[in-house]
Amino acid sequence: MDQQQKVTLTFSDATPALDLPILTGSVGPDVIDIRPLYGKTGKFTYDPGFMSTAACRSGITYIDGDAGILLYRGYPIEQLARSCSFLEVAYLLLKGELPNAAAKDDWVGRITQHTMVHEQLARFYSGFRRDAHPMAVMVGVVGALSAFYHDSLDINNAEHREISAIRLIAKVPTIAAMCYKYTVGQPFMYPRNSLGYAENFLHMMFGTPAEAYVPNPILARALDRILILHADHEQNASTSTVRLAGSSGANPFACIAAGIACLWGPAHGGANEACLNMLEEIGDVSRIGHYIERAKDKNDEFRLMGFGHRVYKSFDPRATLMRETCHEVLGELGLHNDPLFKLALALEKIALEDEYFVDKKLYPNVDFYSGIVQRALGIPTSMFTAIFAVARTVGWIAQWNEMIGDPEQKIGRPRQLFTGAPAREFLPLPRRG
Image 1 (cartoon, rainbow, N blue to C red):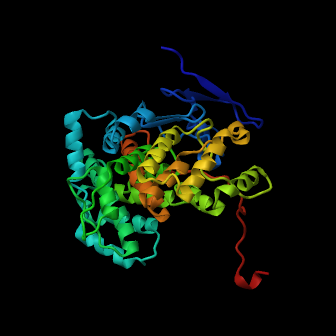
Image 2 (image 1 turned 30 degrees about the horizontal axis):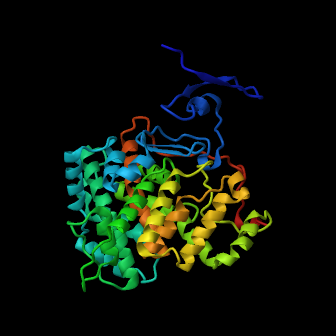
Image 3 (image 1 turned 120 degrees about the vertical axis):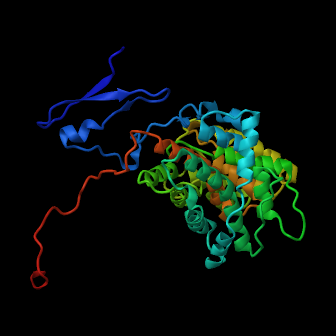
């Protein structure tokens, strides 16, 4: 057996040198195991944002940002998005393998049978203002699920974990659609077991008791693809939040509510909404040149939203797929000449051809296209992040479930570099200057 690789850490003070093991994954960068560091040296590492720190072992999602690769359980996202439904991908993320025909039918059936929420839960909505942001409502309502489904909250019981997973995947779309209906003053629409996952969500969003809603299959497939492309994305902020909350032993509903709260942040889940706001600010194709020049000016605070990506340094593989879907939807709805969409397509063309954007690899990302698609579907911008939460719920659950089964997992406890006042003498009130 080959000797394990190691790195030797030396110090400029009197601290003895320390050998640290190097861990090798199935793919991706090697990892220096720093767990012995504090015990043997009394020193911590300093890594704001955990940009160079692996906080866990995971076999779910792999990203190679330089090569533009995204794998779910080893499968390229391109293959899954073109050939699978969202619920097949959900099964894959949770169970590690794609289902066969019988397993798929059983899985879809179990999800379908759990899409309704407790009737008392619907009364929660009346406690919120009508103009409350949908994400504010989702944080509260999803967190409250544990008060209604407390029969399966033993996180050490595999059967309980699976029941909770099915309930969350099934009910979060219902909760999100109810958020929308509440804000527009329309009655809630009950889920329909005859419809697929994405079709059912469109029905609950846009159907009314006055007439039957028939989902357009092209639009339903577009939404299904949005869900697939956003289902998981490795150890991002919201996923790390779910894992951190779960490390304390919190129930899965509370952990997913924590993830929703983190996703709400504009630096994480609000990018596609920011893209549309930018398009509306530009306003007209004739003004694109002016805004392109502003984007190139380092002294100008304006930034083109939806271009480039923090992780993907070449291209976002999800964007290529979302671009196809975007053009399918615009063609189906006859919106290529709509002013906003015409502006978006013109901006896309310039960004793909302009030397400045090409050199800096500022390609349109998935948020650029998904915002356009959701706008075309009739989904208001305030709901964009809520739909992101619907998609990411399955990834959060898969990551949470993996964490529960990890024998190395400990309660999260980041350290700090303390820069405050050292110990000092307390002064009674009369002696304070």
